[in-house]
Image (cartoon, rainbow, N blue to C red; front, side, top):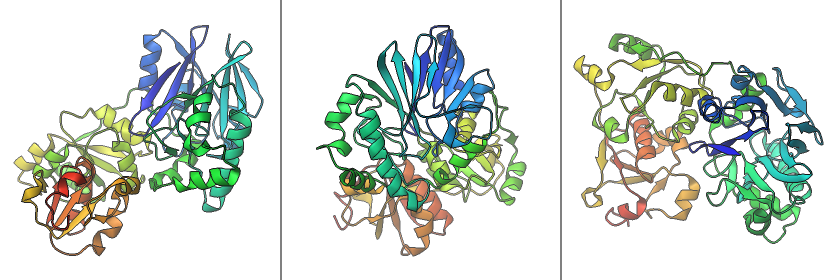
Amino acid sequence: MTGVVDEGLGNSSYLVELGDGGALIVDPERDPRPYLAELEQRNLRVRFVVETHLHADFVSGSRELVALGADLWAPAGAELEYRHRPLGDGEELDLGGLTLRVIATPGHTPEHLSYLVYDGSSPIALFSGGTLMAGGAARTDLLTPDQTEPLARAAYRSIRDQLLTLPDEVAIYPTHGSGSFCSVVSGTERTTTIGNEKKSNPLLAGSPDEDTFVRRLLAGYGTYPPYFLELREVNRKGPRVLGPTLAPLPRLSVTEFEQALAGGVELIDVRSAEAFASGHIPGALSNPWRDSFSTWLGWLVSRETPLVFVTDVTVDDQDLAWAALTVGFENLMGVLAGGMEMWAEASRPVSRIEIATDPSDIDVATVIDVRQKAEYDDGHHPAAVHIELGSISASATELPPGDLLVHCGHGERAMTAASLLARAGHENVTVFQGGYELLARSVAGS
């Protein structure tokens, strides 16, 4: 069993080696390159792909692997509009020495299936999708508000009646996990066992009744990116197949770039926060290249908007394109040829944002903390105004005039927020690179 982890989205896919030189892949993301690399390294070919549910947080890579010769198995309730074998509760599939048993586990989604792997008569591994994971379970509020509680109750019954009845030693391989906005989890472990979850899962502590479980699960929900409400349907209808090697992103001259900007594209600057601060194109959205790039791109920009990018030598074009495609952006217009150096050489306007690292040098009227609510609740500067990054644009006009200091944990989200505030007309925005503990030592109001 080999896990392929996307740290940014907080998800895992799995590759299972079969006895005939083939492989089964569970819940692949759109970018096929990690799976193809694993297959090549182990001299395997992909034979089967299985989906546990319609994913809300990424575009599925199943069709990419089907195009390479795999058979796709998916929940019948997903009603996929492309070629696959629909599966239902209780079915068993021969994997050539292993058996895959289908278990209906509604909760995270109505159509959700889990897959139990048998070696002979012994269950050895469970692919649980979002039903049960290390230290938690997946949220149930990604469809409609009226389904949130019924699905949470379905999740309780799926876990109690279908999964916790399995032997304690059965290994659990969830899709969602720590870092996923689909999940409600404690800890950072990616895999677990039935026995471990019986003993240590906070949602199951004290053998809760259904009402207690539902109350605990719903209490763990935070905000999530708006594209989560769109990708289920993208995955149901079927994303277009791209192939393992993408065409290079077009390199746009300064003039072509300006023409694109005039046409209503979104300009994403993927350079570091420091590089963006030292000089960027006015109106650009700072989204530094890192594991969470895709999540924040999808959170802050409409998927229907064409994208252009400012990059540098630290960012590979193929990686950048797949990161955008994985959260459903299809219209990638190109990259500024020559980057900011070419823009500056052409005497085009350049904006800057101040970065502060020494709290003793700071004297501002308003401190803005753009971390998630759970982070803020764990500790914050006592004078800070809390606005999650995902809400900063909507709140920009409500902030007082004057100097603003924006902070997060390290500086990347703060720089994104600063770029949005500058776009909204705030002229004196400073980014603090450091946590609230350091900031609280010297900023007025501490």
